[in-house]
Image (cartoon, rainbow, N blue to C red; front, side):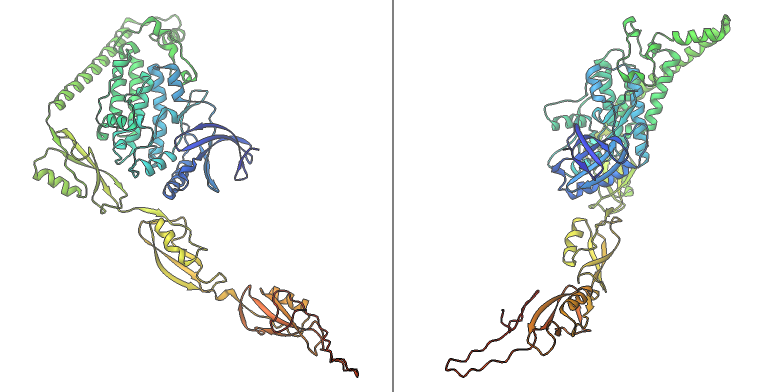
Length: 602
């Protein structure tokens, strides 16, 4: 029998698995559609910090709607099962295409890279960093659309393992940025680095850094030299190679400032190729075999056309149809040639300028980067001036820190002790204090439990006041801030607890009532009855006394003792015989909840 989550999602088959979760194909019975459900593995469900981060980041990701991002429909929990309900993509992972097709044609690489960059741009504008961009997390639909998945969980995983876990690095180490490998501060440029590695792999069929173990690969990201793609695959456009190398620069400050800037560079590359011809752009003559190589798989249906790789013959045919039998004037031909020559000259000049600047930069001396941690920006700049160090300070982002005082430097890139060229810029991130945490739900909990719950959430207990309530005395009936709200880490949470007074009720007067009447009256008032019997002149079955008495206050749910008449006691009979006198007592006694110990049980 298939498993059903939340009474709604029926799981059918397991379709994938990652380091942190398992993915199932399921059906949403409410909306009658197929979905994918990602379920956290059991080893992560006992980490409250991870779970809280997973929930918040998944909810943030669910708010994003973009054609190149896998939609998240729902985030939930059932028992110990934490799950995300996502759009089901009827396609394959980009990693599968790379394995099958090997080095991919560069127009395909450009087209897919633009789509992935567009998804990252949208996420970054919504203040979400993916942190795990890799071909396995990019799905290709049958019509060739690239869709990124694992937004949210990627950040939750990294926040709980990469930065905070000292036991080792966990994750996709082949695509790590150097700052991720060091366990340092991660921002949008880390995603750009990972995308650069993906572009490299699409273009060459292999990752730039590989090794026997994750630590070795991580060290290569930090210190290793990347082999240019053109050394592995002939005919790579120099401009595309430059874009990839810029994405994967060791120093974030030297990468593209944003995903939008990367998209602009790729658009310019396509534009230049369409104007001057792909052969010139690639710096070589396209072979006849390459010119007729057909596109492979659904990726070929993206926004490029391999059928036009024969030098623009298609455009010329369209031109002829539009103009009919009219011939272009020699003047027009000369103008077109002149524009092409000017454009080519401009490109060559730009390349030469880049080479010159690179040479100038290479000749500068190297200096060690000081440790600016805990300094203010002003103190860091003064330190450079006092020690005659030719470096620049650039303010990065405001980040949460439990250790560094607000307004002081938390981290820097490049890091302390690294060697950089003179005149380089050091980006520093500034502490904005311990940050905010989610306030736990304390309502219904005992006052004695509060410290433990708050300490686990990074908060402390504030003012405790009491109010009348029908709840058990000492039970929390309200709190401030409320559950789910955010509060600064280390701040106090005020609570109001019940004094238990409204948990009491007035005992009804039941003397003179029959036993059944007395039980009914007491039950309606919130009490139970403890019945015993005594001989009495009162009518048999009539309540002759109660404890506590009528109109007194008693905690709801308590038992009221009532004594019921067993009728009159018969007098002993005397006989004239010499037999010993016997006394016969007639009484019937039953109890519902308790028996008076002074009365015998019959």
